Amino acid sequence: MEEPQRVRSHTVTTTASSFAENFSTSSSSFAYDREFLRTLPGLLIVAEIGLCFNGSAFILYLSAAVVDASSVYPERDSHNFNSWAASSFFAFLVTICYAGNTYFSFIAWRSRTIQ
Image (cartoon, rainbow, N blue to C red; front, side, top):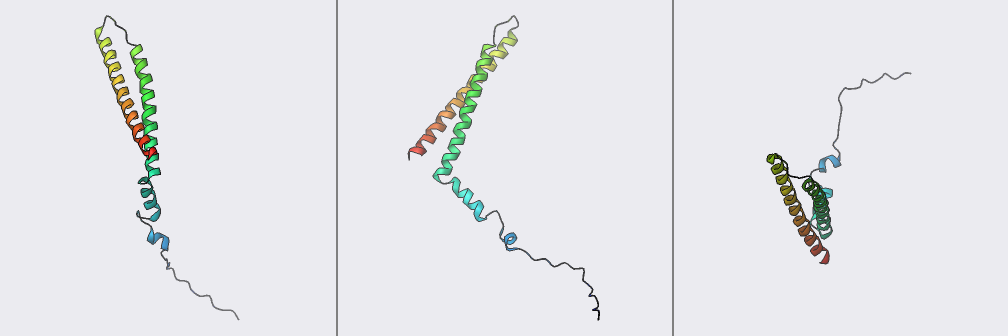
């Protein structure tokens, strides 16, 4: 005896997973990462990144300012000389700013490592 085939319905039944229901931006893994930045090791990492960025920017700007200043020489056309002199001045000004920022980043990093 052969059983008659049942007709299947065309509806789809879905269920929500518990992971999808509980996922939000305030998940425990994201909260841990935010809390890590408030701890001493997290602050040291941020300070070291700032120190490395400012130090490398200082070195690059210093080399660019030296090359810029060494290429300035007086010509008959004073406009060209004035432009090059102004660019050299501002290149050294930016270099001094990065040097100061590197110094303050180092002081902040050093004071956190001593504690």
